[in-house]
Image (spheres, rainbow, N blue to C red):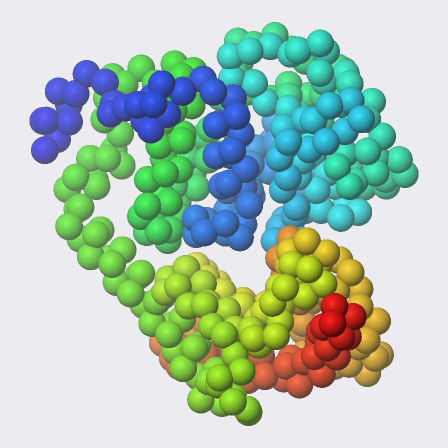
Length: 381
């Protein structure tokens, strides 16, 4: 096998190469945004975002110093409107920091874009003035491309970013769905080949190891996916076994090895298109395996419902949640969240603990949620 690999003159074609779109800027942007959003179904969680922020913080030309906690709260938007035209990507974490990203593949700026974006007073829904958090403007381009026209933008090359993304695949092998691992690797191959970053004069030691242990690795990955799916199944079983009330009142969405959520059947399409649900996530990280419990309030109009819930909860309720270590994360999907350690040697006990904590949350918030949902249903009627 190694001899055959050594005879390869060029790597296999990437997906964008096959369809003849390797330099299509919008495709590079769409793929980057997909992998940056923690709740997309790729299974990387916040790992890609963490790598991207680390790359920016360790770049000599930027002043960005990311806070490593609560990355699930970071909003990721694309084609963000301003009074001076839309820019490519916005990352922002409430009042802590935001990053404006204008990316290029082969083209240069059109009409001094970066100058216009740097002068914008509003980035989508985010007001630049007043804003007390950290601000970073990034011009993400190939190393050979001309610098940005705005002094406010820092020039960062794709060549600088790629090694940080590669580290995600190297250190996380076996932790991510095989399909997502392949998709992300294909994206990075597209970038490397388009920018001529690969001379391809040798086969990496990682590839050689994979060819030697491929069957063993595949068995390990299958076992990992199977165990993760079983944890989700047990969460579902335990939840409904301990449910006080009728199971028929609930809807469930269980996609083994990816996610699971529970919602009362009246909690959909609140105030238009807001969805309310409980969504446990399973993280089998080697150092800190956990079950991440979440109360999700998502969809257009979510801020209104979140504010109503905050106002409906009394101070005693808020104190109860805080004492039980529930965090108000107020992210793109999650509103409340809590981490429960997952004991690898006794997962059933951890699952029971997690469902017990979820039921304690239900006792506190469900009367308020039901009241809010009923009010909006009455208003609609």
